[in-house]
Amino acid sequence: MEDPHSVNSPRRTLSLTKNRRATVLFPDSNNKVSTFGVPADYGPKPSEVYGFVGSISTVVATVIFLVWAYVPENWLHSVGIFYYPSRYWALAVPAYLMVTVVLAITFYIGLNFMATPPPASFNTIFDEFSREPLPSSALTDDDDDERPIDPISDIGIDQINNIMFNNPQ
Image (tube, rainbow, N blue to C red; front, side, top):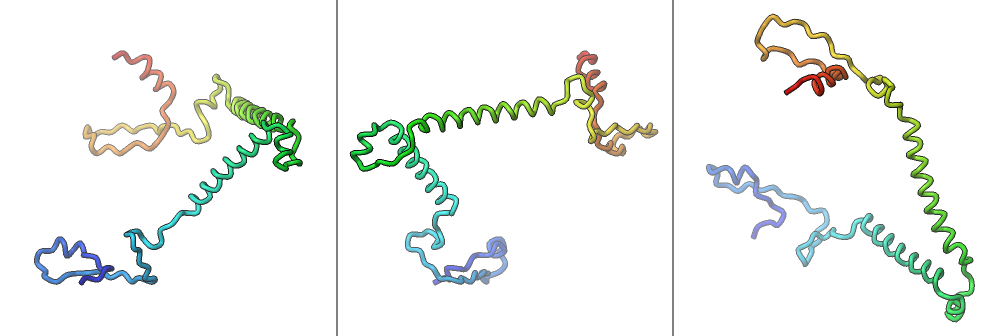
């Protein structure tokens, strides 16, 4: 019977002239044997576990919050729950959170408007990374195959406007 850790070499598969069998042995440090055909080190990843615990915790916290917010006080007292926060916080905390999110989004949009230059500014066309095209030297040869590639540069706004608006097709 063959060794379970041997693998046929691609050279053996492609070679038709050799009669010997080329094998590669992989040493097994821990001889774990799985009975179901799955690797022995198979198991949940830590991120999966954290995600599962987080989702279950969120569901449990939501249920506790809804019970606290909507169940009458005498029902909570009959179950034996006497200490809980004021019902004011059942409305105040979600309202404060929503207002905080709306203000944060508004603040972020406002900062972007303040950081953006006005439309008539040359900063919308040129910046510190702009590169003017180098003047191309006149080539005497008509052979375009020997012409070197132009260095990288920005296309001028006058060339773009000329191509887009003055070039009838």
